[in-house]
Amino acid sequence: MTGTAPSASAHRQAAQAAADAAGVEVRLLTTVAEFTEVSELFQVIWAAQDESSPVNVETLRALSKAGSYIGGAYDGDELVGACFGFFASPGRRALHSHIAGVSERMRGRSVGFALKVHQRSWAIDEQLDEISWTFDPLISRNAYFNLVKLAATGTAYHQNFYGQMNDALNGGDDTDRLLVTWYVHDPRVVAACAGEPEPPAETPLAAPLLSVGTDLAPVHHATAASVVRVTLPRDIERLRITDPELATRWRLAVRETLGTLLEGGARVLSFDRTGTYTIDRGEHHS
Image 1 (tube, helix red, strand yellow):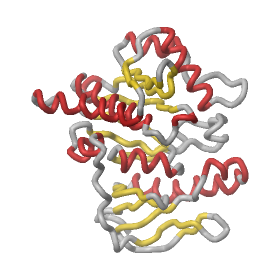
Image 2: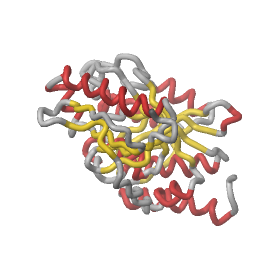
Image 3: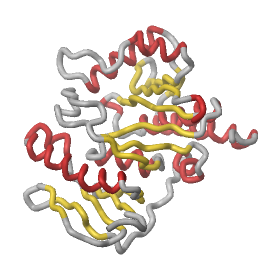
């Protein structure tokens, strides 16, 4: 599965090209000083005032000792992005990527993409077949990044995956998560990591299942169509601050549509920049 010498060099070349394009150096982190930088960076990104970082130095040290992945992106001497994960059960040849984050000043420069392509290269060298992680399905930019730019596959929907999280990004709402799996040798993933993601398939017959009303509230639509669309609010993170009750209604609406569909065996076909999932219900929808 790990391929011949040309493919082995190709994944490293893709990782280097992504780092060069982002203007950063991406490397494995191995020292306590580096783990301290990761913990401090994640505290700035996720923690509310006076709260601790979502990961401490001791945990990162233990993960590193166990051989798991901890990568960092540097702009000169400054750590501007980091990502870490740990191995799944041995028979699966898989990594679970737990947290990835980029400093605010470097957003929009594809640092997160460079980190993930480096992580994939490392996984291939470790003879792994897949990497999985979760993300908040209500945050459009994350859905686009994971499903389109990285060509990961939506594989499950988990309700309140982490329980209540009152950090700066989750705002105390239930932590529903979409699990994605990145099949590192899939031709779609290879193309995406080379910066050439496949355009989404045309789905002209897709019917709306969930849309945004004129009052920004979720609107459900009854449809028997086999391919449906679930559209997200424009900025759920802002909504969680300005109107938490409406944000919760959106969480429940996406759970009832996208979540229920995935639990029933549906497939996410694509996600577009308008904030819309296109979903194939499959042959057995009612």
